[in-house]
Structures are given as C-alpha cells and as structure tokens.
Figure (cartoon, rainbow, N blue to C red):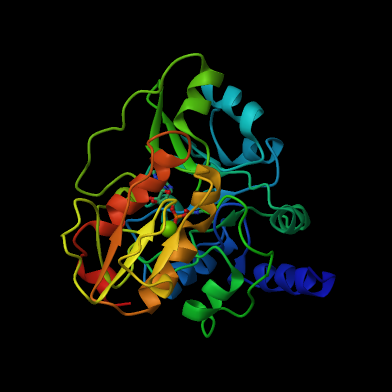
Length: 320
Ligand code: TXA
Ligand code: MG
C-alpha cells in the first residue's frame, strides 16, 4: 500500500465521497458514517434498498463510545476477545448516527476491522466509516480489489488494494436480546463465541417482513448462474460447473470445477469460496452444482452462504 493512495482515500472520504476499502473479511464500499449525503452514494452505487442498514467501522473499542448509548456486558466480553476482527455487534445507537445508516432501527451495527490498511485509514479519519460489502446488491461479496473493479470500478473514484482477504467471509453479526443472538454467521464461528461467553448462543430470531439483517434474505451472495445444492442429478447435465469441498470429480473437466480446500481445511475453504463462485459464474454454464461442507467452525457460515446462493433470486439481484 503506497502512502499516496492512503492520502487520496482520506481526502476523498473527507470530501464526502466513497472509497472501496480492504478488510480481512471482504472488501467494503466506505463513506463517512456521520454524513447522510455521503452514505446515500453507497446505496446508489450498490443499487441497495434503503431498508438494508449499514455496518459502521471504527479503529478501536474506545472509538465506539460516542456512537452508542450502552455496551452490554456480553458485548464487552466479545469485544475484548475478538477485536479487532470479523465481529459485528448490534448496539443501541447514539443520536449522531443518521437514520439512513440503521434504516431507522434503534440499533447500530459496529465493527472493528483488523486489516492493517483499513486500520491505518480509520486511524487517520475523524469519523467512522459506513461500509457494506463492495458488490452490487444481492451478488457475491468481493475478496480482491479486482473483484471490486470488475463490478463497481467505473463508479468508485478509488479502490484501495490490500490484497486478497484473509478470512473471505463477512463478519459474524451478534445482537443482544438480552442474551447474545447470532444474526448472521460469519468469520468468527458460533462455537468460539459460545466458548468465550460460557454458554451457547440463542437461536436466530424469526424472520421479519423487513429482515433485521438482509444478509439474511434468502437470495443473497448469489451468482447469476443457477446454483444447486445436493442431491445432484445423476448423470450430471452436460453444461455445468462444480463447486467441491475437497475432492476432484472426474465427471467434469478441471476448468469447470473448483475445490475449496484439498486439505479439507474450513478456513481455507472460506477464504476461497467467493472467488471460486465468481470464477464458475464467469463460465456461464447453465448450472453450478455446489457441495456443502462439514457444519463445524467456519463451515456453518460457508453453508449459510451456499444456501442463500441457491435460493430463488428476487428481481433486484437478477438485474446485475
Ligand atoms: O465483514 C463484513 O461485515 C463486511 C465488511 C465490509 O465489514 N460488511 C458487510 O456489510 O458484510 P453488508 O452490508 O454487506 O452486510 C451487513 C449486514 C446487512 O445484512 C445488514 O442488514 C446488517 O448487517 N445490519 C447492518 N446494520 C444493522 C442493524 N442496525 N440492525 C440489524 N442488522 C444490521
Ligand atoms: Mg453484503
């Protein structure tokens, strides 16, 4: 990362513009979280509905204080254990957070990213950054600067390149009701959270008409190609691609399949998931057949993304 790019990012963000930023989970499309006009541009560029609230990114635990009314004890425990890192907490918002950022909710989503470039940027800014994943609404999240450039390059004045994302899946979102509840599985496994809190987390809250986390919309993280989970048809249709966990499938040529981790490592599989989905989507086959992974560690979040990618698409995501 050249300093001049960081300078340029600081300048653009201070003048109310958007910048694509690397984080350890996925790339984000960032703007000044305290400036509604700046934040409106994120929604426009992503074609994102206004009912879908944004995560607010800060450099440190101390920087959270002015943005919230309270940090419940369980949230403090999680912050101490996992910050900075792939964890987002839903906390009661302070008055300085614009309605647009929370979509009118009384809770604001807060995250402290660990990526060094993102940290350096946040430390130089006098305001927090609102940032959703830097993809058109409903499509697969970007895990490299090239992924962002391919879809939003002509609409974003700067993409800070911080290399491929180390985690490759979005942050885990936790709310307090008052017990800790996982709203979205992500880069920190449920079992890790439970270990630190000393008890299993309550199940996900029931779906609302306007979902609390539209990452929870059935069709999300979706390629344009129809993606199917097991059971797969036998024989496989001719015009297809395969997304495998660890094994090679001799029925399909190597060009048309990806193995997420030949070692069977779920962290590696998470890191490779979205890039593999994009590569297979680019082949423009009639179908992608995807295998689920063991439901342990990051496997829960990987399977969650696969289920959503396989769900029937709604109009907005088909447009991209
Ligand atoms: O890892 C991540 O979380 C990445 C990086 C860029 O930080 N960001 C990300 O943002 O995945 P996005 O917008 O693609 O997904 C954020 C999810 C959305 O589904 C949104 O609905 C939920 O967080 N969310 C944000 N604010 C919320 C709030 N106040 N209440 C409930 N859910 C909220
Ligand atoms: Mg997203």
